[in-house]
Length: 442
Image (tube, rainbow, N blue to C red):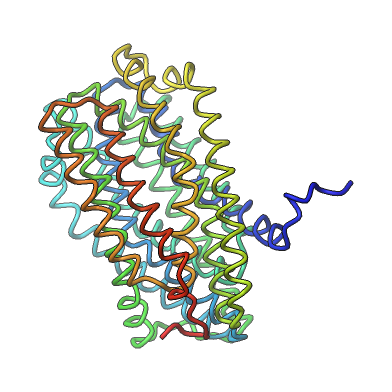
């Protein structure tokens, strides 16, 4: 049966080949936290709030290192487009060594600073001990998670999104089983949830190391760390780090504002934020396809192909955003009951889910264009845009805090931030400045 013309775009097959498996892999991280949230939510409001605070800290630690995945994907894809597969794998190995080193440093620094970090969020006396416990245990999973990021970047750059999907399914299944065992059966409390995630993340990192090592032997790439390669991997991610930090400042500021509203508000914000994150990662599946396709096409000097694929992926982003908005609105009456029995938290969630749903079409465009520009290696512009759009959000969040606005007002402030990102990335995509060709962007 012939597909309708709207579904027969020349780039659809490649986009779907990369995006569908990437979707499963991407939602693994928010599914970890959603599973944690659903299980910990049965322990009470204070543990749920503690998970929300600690989750933001851990998300920041991991996401400031996202260059291990995104920067590697762009660099490896360009090398693949230029026909340099051995060099592509070599860059990935350096990224894994860098991931292990950064992970160990984060444990050493984060453990003694955990009480101060939690206190900076302004958590209540009931929430703070729960957050500190979860954070300290979860730090031991950071090296494994960073290796997962680096290994994922290598495979995506090699145009392989199926292996990350298989690993993600295994990690999620293991995480869910262990959390249920440790928390609901053995009664370890919030620490049990953290230990389940640590074990799953470490196991996933081990699988990626084994996979990349097999690829290195197949293509004759050396396994030892290369000082020059490590420096290149670290310095190339500076602009991407700035971009990521600007995103995390926005998300942390949102958590801080919600924390100061009260325990019910931070608990509801935690659940709403995890729903938002799940949808964001789902939309990011198209962005991952954008990273791989754009990097490969620009590495092969196919500017017209990169432009056409971008236009099509934006259309997919809008369509998925509309679909996700309708799904959230449809399940909204029943969703809060999955996470909490607290009537106040449920009431707050019912209101905020409407705003979250309405933001999805804008998010679809934003995440796709972000992925395309990362694939093009346009990191400097992304860093500048990140800082400017953060500057648009912070006054709106401050106004919510100073005027005593509620969670709906806070999510509207997040909407202001998304609109600013939509404008900044859309203007860049319409220009030709990001269409730089070659095996290495100069």
